[in-house]
Every structure is written in C-alpha cells, then in structure tokens.
Length: 342
Ligand code: RBF
Image 1: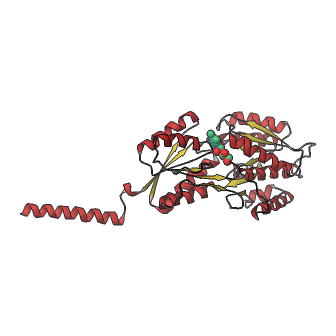
Image 2: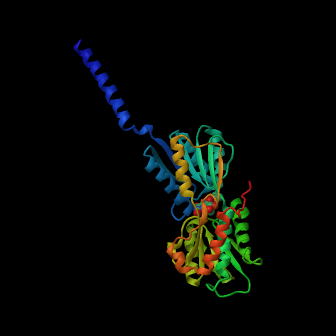
Image 3: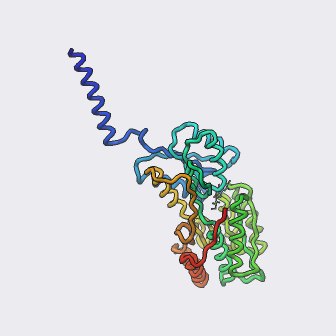
C-alpha cells in the first residue's frame, strides 16, 4: 500500500513538473528548427551576410526558434548533396537559402523529401506548395548602378574621355547576370549617354581576389573609370586595382562605402536581410504562404541606392547626387519602373 502510494506520488510529481516545465519554458524540441544553407561562404559575400543576419535576427527576436548555418562551399556540384543530407535528418521545419540557382537544387531535393519546407531569397519559383521565394528587382538595381556610373563618368570627378565606358565584373555567368544585370546596367549607362558601352568581365569563381585585381586593372587601363563588382571575395581585388589606378568601384547589395572610402563611391542595396527576417518570422508564426513567389523593387522599398552615408556625400559631387535623386524619385513615385519577366 505504502509502496503504491509512493508510486502514484512519483507519477503525479512527474506529470506536474513536466507540465509546469512545458508552460514556463518549452523544451528544445518545441522550438521551430531552421537550417540555413549558404551556397558558398558567408564572409566577403554581401548577399549571404544579409541572409544569415536576417534569419538570426528572426530567431533572436521571436525566441521560439533555433538556427544552424551550414556553408556549402564553392564546389557547386556538392550543394544538392548537402541540402539532401539536411532534409534527410528530418530536423528542420524550414531550410532557408539564397541565390537564383537554388530553385533547381531545391526541386531535386523535394523529389526525395517532399515534405521539407523551403524559403529561398534572391530566387524565383512559383506555385510549389513547399517553397516560398523572394526575388529582388535586379533590373531596377542594375539600372541604378549603370545610371550612377555614367553620371560619375561624365562629371568633373573624372578626366573627360571621348567615349563613355564602364565595367561590370562578375564572379560567374548565370542567367540573371547575363540576361538581367548586364543589359540593365547598360540601359542605365545609356540613359545618360546613348553611346556608352560596358566592359563585362567574368572571374570564374567567387573568391580569387588576386586574379580579380589583374582583370580589374585591365578594365581600368582600357577606359573604364567606374567598375561595378559582383564577385564575392573577388571584390577586394577590384578595390585594390582601383586604389592603384585612382579609379572608382560600385558596390552591390549592401552599403559598401566603408570598404574603401573614396574608392567605393556608390552602393545600390537590396533589403535581403529585411526580407529574410520578415519571411522567417512569418514561417515561425505559421503564416508564411508557401507556393508564393514575390518580386520586390524600388517602389516596394526593397531596392535602392544608399544615399544616407556620410562617405557618399563626402566623395560624390553634388551634381551627381542631385541627378541620381531625380532618377530615384521617378522610381519611388512609380512614374518609372522596369519589369522583371519570367
Ligand atoms: N554572390 C556572392 O556575393 N557570393 C557568392 O559566392 C555567390 N555565389 C553564387 C553562385 C551561383 C550559382 C549564382 C547563380 C549566384 C551567386 N552569387 C554569389 C550571386 C548572387 O546570387 C546575386 O546574384 C548577387 O549577389 C547580386 O545580387
């Protein structure tokens, strides 16, 4: 009798402590579990720095989720296998990733793990019930970079040349680069000078700053005063070449002025960190709409030019800043927009 009372007591004690524990502080298994797959490495790539920052902020502010960041490295042939192994653990309520090629990888992974949910930034995949994507209007972003490059190249900031030429330096070729960023950068240049041309060079990877410096040197030597660099770790090589030759660099995706004051003189931004934060919070809350593919641009406030940096005001002529502001106002008011087509 005494022994069974003790047993009941123990059971009641266990039930009480478990439920009390459950009310006050959920055990770790109740946390919404997020895996971030970085297709590359975080350091040196503005776009991936924002991805990780946005998801980590969502986890910190909701305090109801956990996050693990996995870097896929530069061997793109291994990315699918790494995401497969993440999905195979069954540990992740959501896998978050970013870049325009990831929908192909995710589709392949879903063939084997059809219940895994994904949030993909900087990408477009519509009507897949497991996937939410957010694409930024790179047509508008690259146009603004080109417009600004041409304004600088025709200002007293550079020695006048007979023909306007500006550089676009890319880590690799991919459809968004070749079909959206390059032609829109050229369109932006030509909005200032219809005869302007682009010197488009490709590094072939996202890390080799030494080779990037060689290529950028040749771009500056052959008539470009301004080079837009989208090359991850390679961006540092472009800065080094510009410093040697006293030329200018445009940053892409994040404010880049402090990378090299007076050399990085212009920066377009995408609010990928804000989008990653907002969509991750929605996923944690259970309100994220899977199957949906959003495209966000200047008029939405997710794409723009970083004007509120003292280094921008210090190193860029007011005539250039004023002309840029007029163009931005046309985008912001909706008077002017550029469509991304799929
Ligand atoms: N951008 C980076 O800054 N670093 C990278 O390592 C990187 N890797 C990429 C790999 C692939 C396969 C593709 C398609 C794009 C990559 N990008 C990278 C470019 C990135 O997705 C985006 O287009 C640019 O950051 C411009 O917003």
